[in-house]
Image (tube, rainbow, N blue to C red):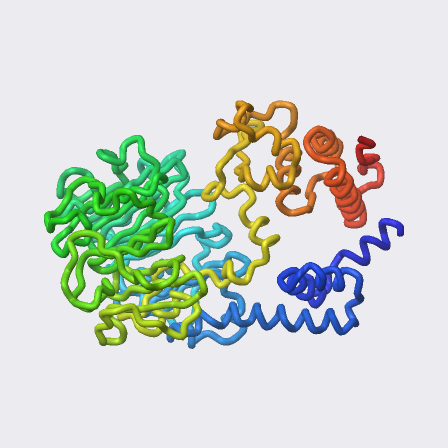
Length: 548
């Protein structure tokens, strides 16, 4: 079969084919093979296309329309939403991002929290041009409300209420539109943000925490109670430690480290710091009540806290007026208490600083809720009919704010191949970096060992590379080496023709004969596509797979 015929057969430009291919991957390898060898008119294509289309529709419909504010949008506008967050004192404001990274706002616009440049409310979505194309990775909001977000490039933007300098711009003037926060954050890549009622926190890729804003109870962690007008690094007990997660209550702050330790600071009148007492803390203090446990996730409600360990155990502490601790009573807890002891492994916990509601999801997908639920006090975890914790806050929290920025593209609906592709060059999950031409490529040792014999040998205890967090690569260019590593995650190659020879060289050195052969088949096809789309045949290198 000549390349052109192969191209025509495999190109999947028809939307039905793409849906069918993705559905087939999810259903199984056997069906995937059937789809690869079938034509678009075959029954298999039509059936799998329908399955995948329905799965996508369910993913789009299940979350967003449970929030009343989104009922003002028509079905076409709803279908475009990729990420969203509902917030505000009454759950009457929302920001959403479309599949092409356009950012829109709608709602009441208290304290200019929509960032539209004016103080007018709107039921017609308004585009926030300054944020379009930025790829938002983290979003949080306060009680003013004020809004903080982080982009894929590690930048922070803030707007809204600023009476306590919670926007971090050194003033107390309200922000009517998004402005970048840069003081003390130059050359820092922010990966996560969190907001309390009137203070803000940011976590960098280096594991550092910065905080600013209202500090009446020490929630900024500066050692004093003076308000902090610009981002300040939280040090003291966090100095030289690597933080991997942050959370804020109304006037408290928490951080979890890479070794599973939890630190807390700020207001502690209800025991929400989990330190065994009710005294405020002006600097981070370690929760000794969790000593011996490795915490993976933390969450903060209005004045209560939750922690999830690597063994799937759930611990709670703090205020319990509405039963939000799930202990079966309404008694505050000054130290962490284990709940849901008889339940199966917990995989996700949820709480929001604007409410007294808690939720958790088990390994088999069961979702429990407790605390203040539509005015009722649920003092023990109650099994709901929901499939995700987000729905608990849509239907039962007061106000019905989102506890996190909602992603319509849930991991539940991703195949293994899609998940691997998503994680390539992801600094949040990687455990190794290659440095090429002064740029980092973030990878995962386990994936490289599975896919490549060279790396399987390299990451052994007697090789120096196994102990390194950064490996320098000098013999190949950044585009070439990145394309090679990306191929190991995706089975796809994307390179301009002039770099193809360099990629050929790295493959000869690095990977096995079997993967080598497959790689070159894809590379040939990729070059052919480049020509078909306007390139010159003279630009296409003569590429052959290595004979050995």
